[in-house]
Image 1: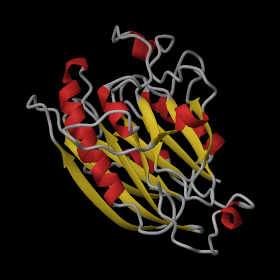
Image 2: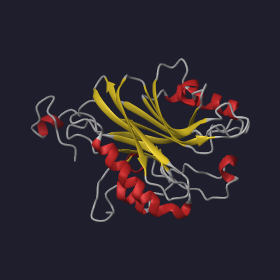
Image 3: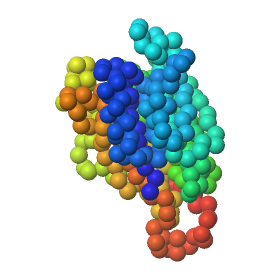
Length: 289
């Protein structure tokens, strides 16, 4: 199985040092192969993702979105953005800047090609505009983001994986577009929402008011964090097998971040009998649907 985690880190807000301990505990518990972090910090002398994953053997890449000037922060003078981490070496990386709403909030994406034991994997992480009223901006961003992630899929092998904090609910135009349920200006795509495919059938909320860091913002419970994948290869490789909400437990009233995380597992070996059923030879480059 290939395991994937996405988590918004909430930069260094709240009781950060204690939160960092909880994030590390979750990483150790889940032991994901690929991680996408949003609201990650990198300063002149400090890299938040590298510190959180210290000693765990991950390869890390980062793309800043906006300057970070929080007073009395050791990341002051650095950047606030997205990070990816891989258990295996990263062969290539590419960055993208997404369209904005003209309000000073900048959003970016980072995509990497991972050299896994079962072939190359394209993995992309991003964070879209957060304001409720910015749905039209997110529509533009999500089209750009999906084109970026799909373009970077290796020509053969594993389906593309796209993760992040999309700040959009499953019923929104933004997410409907990603899932092939709605077109934008005559353009459409289709990816799979890991929670919808392999979750437990519940709402899967990742912004919840039982978490006081979220409750203080006075917003309602909803699902806004996603793991999205291309359709599996016809032999079963890339099939979503499990998905769950994680980083969802406090310790001594401290939560890992203001968001909950999402964790998924994807199949890495063919399903017995499918290659014969579809008349595939071992190693065939099968078009992903």
